[in-house]
Image (cartoon, protein in one colour):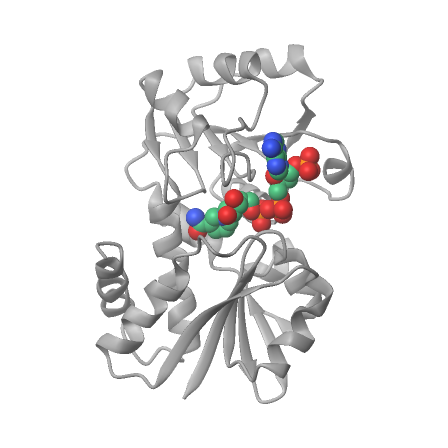
Length: 265
Ligand code: NDP
């Protein structure tokens, strides 16, 4: 039996095991997908091989550590230095990023987007900012602290929370929360007055968190914005990851249908 896993901290909330096991079960694939609570990202590679895994997904906060753990990184992941999918090829670890395509897939109902504000500057933000730039959007990136803004050559205008005047002057079509604010607490990804100003002039809001309505998404909905939560992105990235795990043995639509059913469980 082939073994797969998701690494994260926290990871108990993850729906990935349910999604991937639904595909394996529905199509008689001799495989099982579990979750691993990993505290130290530097242990990712040794833990992966010690468990005899064939593949894995990586979530908060280890996606950059996953990039460093790979022998080879392919496609979009190479461009952004962030890996969310690991596949074992012999004794080599190959890294991919399926998050950004999953998000673009999820926002298909959002029309005529030209400008975006991304909240947070972690691994997920790196992938989304690059993908938005590739789509031709003007991107404004807002992070709580300045360290992550300075540690990476962001292809975006960058701000910390203390740039209040500049943030209040922003007019964007879509606001995307990529922070962990609201994941397991009730915090906002931006001080309330700045968030109110940003959302008041936007049409769309998206949160990459799924499973419950975050305070950010609740606020956006109360201000009549069209919204999506992270479930659609989760599905999109999961379909692409599963195809890599099973070496494209099933069509993407077949994988998607099996995974979609797991959301009803
Ligand atoms: P990282 O740990 O790499 O980055 C976290 C970012 O969030 C940092 O910029 C950090 O700011 C900011 N942050 C954390 N807590 C707060 C807070 N209370 N208020 C404001 N900012 C905060 O995380 P990832 O990018 O890997 O993941 C981020 C989120 O995306 C997670 O909730 C994860 O579950 C979700 N996700 C969902 C996916 C899906 O498929 N739906 C796919 C991938 C991720 P600072 O620099 O100041 O610390």
